[in-house]
Length: 214
Image 1 (spheres, rainbow, N blue to C red):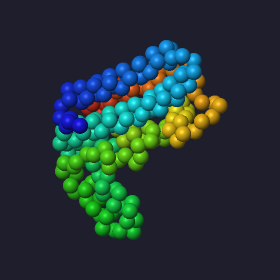
Image 2: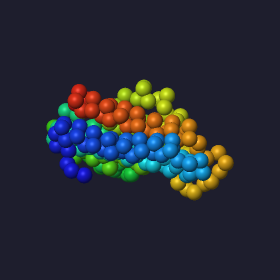
Image 3: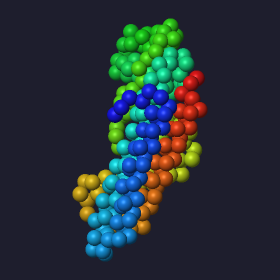
Image 4: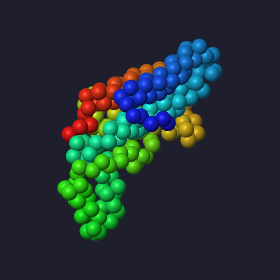
């Protein structure tokens, strides 16, 4: 992945990634309409797995390039919004968590916050990402890390969890009589296409509005 240095780099990366992923889902939608009856079930199951994969990977990609863009600004800790201060201090925070009785680690964190806040720290998404799987709880955490508002997403959390469970069942080879039907597969494809656009817009607005600043 090329380094994101400017706002144009960020917007171009989001646009390219979203377009490539949405195009494959548009193709899957076409296949659901054109397959012969005995082929439809396979296409339904494949559509759910692939759509979930595109959703998961786009969210992680968007988070990574946004944090990479903010990192390229080389802002000091005291210039960053609270969520980005947490990202910048993540190694120190993890040291405190891992050594709960270690007073020196607690002191280092306070020193960073109080005495060295004018320093520039490296911002890395990988240090914040606990797991790749994207259920509603994981999505909520990513939005909190990035400082994104989630009110407009909350009514989708039930569907996000259902998509995650269905994808896991299929990916683990489960065969059942209640396998996804065409209507559900189309609903999944529609959600992911629009979800990618929505999340992309959230990231773009956050960057353009400089929400990463204190």
